Image (cartoon, rainbow, N blue to C red; front, side, top):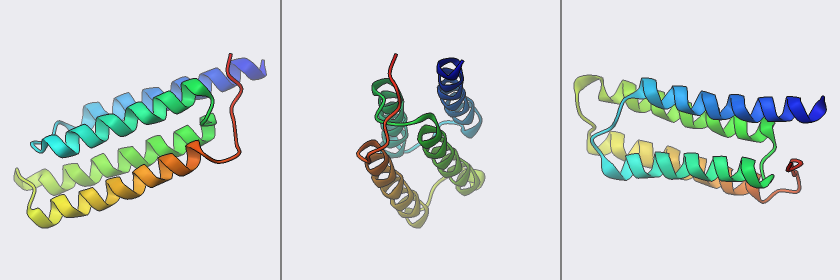
Length: 112
C-alpha cells in the first residue's frame, strides 16, 4: 500500500507540472522556454531515479508553476521587458539551485 501511495504522489506531481504548463502559455523568449523545460526534465529524472522524494518533487513543481504564473502576469501587456526577463532569470536560477540541492541531499525515495 505504501508503494502505491508513493507512486500516486509522484504521478500527481508530474500531472501538476503538465497542467501548470498548459495554462501559462508559451513565452516568446526561447531561453526562458528552454530553462523551464530543462528544469521540468530534471525534476522528472530525479523522481524516476529516486533522488527526489514525492514531497520534494511536489515542492519543486509548485515553484516552477509559480514562476510560470509570474511570467504570465508579466506578459499581460504582450511582451517581456529587459527588467522582467532579468527577474525571471533570477527566479529560474534560484529554482535550479533548489533542484540541485534537493537531488543531492540525503533523502532518497524507494525506486521500484
